[in-house]
Length: 479
Ligand SMILES: Cc1ncc(COP(=O)(O)O)c(C=O)c1O
Image 1: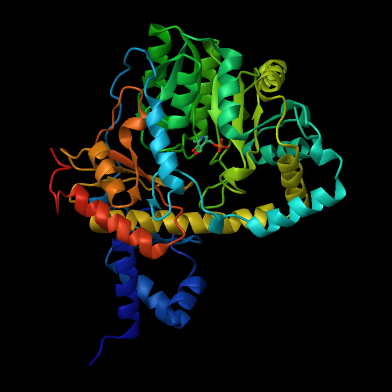
Image 2 (image 1 turned 60 degrees about the horizontal axis):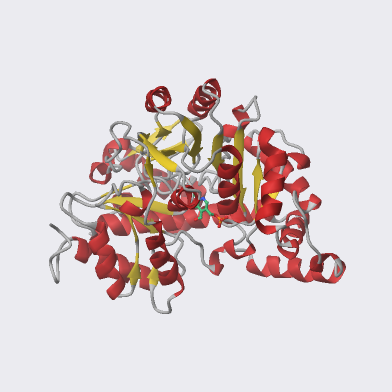
């Protein structure tokens, strides 16, 4: 006799948990959605969840739903490698090698798990096209003219409104438009520091931040960073007392590559610490709106009473990187920023700024954002599950709660630069750990971009990467 339906549904759910579709601590979708998903009655889905509760795979929380118990997937712990103590500051060198990733991203036939860019399938391309057409029609003269800094007033007004969700009360005059978040970071660095100055950074950190530091001839100082909660205040305090630090750059919300979120109390603590030492904070919040659970963590900027936080972001991760629309809320450095933006590139793109302002005015952004968050969550879980399935024993992968990258730590002896080289020969691009550190740490880590439009190619690529990392085939990515 076949087993009862609720047992088979329970088994299927347990398998999804095993494969990482739902991670420990996650809330399962509501019973109604689960019921629809499995095509069964409410009584069956309730019985299946209760069975998993008895088996200590799920935990029921009153008025909240079913959660995956923490101990069910011990095999997939978060990466452990971190900077144990503060090193000496050093110049950043050799970041040109990141261009390999960028080139591979557009190479036909390459599965691009390297660059953190979302393909068009994840973007509201059709709605943006309509906005472009509308502003071209309605503002024909204006789209052909300079949009001098601080830039398009309509867009700054829209951004100021959205910044309230991040806990920041700003006026449009507090915002300067830039060509993406990368330019916002570069201009912020130039506003507060000079060549040779020391900049404290998280470790690992986004390579774009290292490139901005390198381009200005500044020095980077890696500060111990918790893979879950970001820069450790005690480590920053030790660094501040030991070195003459001129600025600090943090990604406290869904940092790239770790996906960490610095709790709000800790953000406040870090801002206060930096304030006490008169060190400006450059905050990169480019993933801030991409929380899977729909919450919008407050930015460190929300705790800035002194105008010492230069908040940088862009629409690259939600509306499209090709728009090149970003901004900085530079606090008391606003006039300097306006001048630096003008001196660097005269103006931002008028057409893009007007089109984004139009898109936001149409009112579809939040609806789209809800969909985008769900899509990114699905893809992050899926890629993490494939890593767990195909990579060698001892591999660890992060479980970010927002954004769309995961950080993978391979077992001891693996070399991610060698893996990158071998994978590229097979048409797979990855971002190796050392490009996220000025001192070349993280030699056995990788960052993977989970925003992939082609499931078959992605599955194949992760399977191949796992085989290469395990030393199968040619057998020598392990030392
Ligand atoms: C953390 C982080 N900051 C900044 C950027 C650059 O963003 P933009 O394309 O808006 O310049 C990126 C892009 O990958 C990023 O991941």
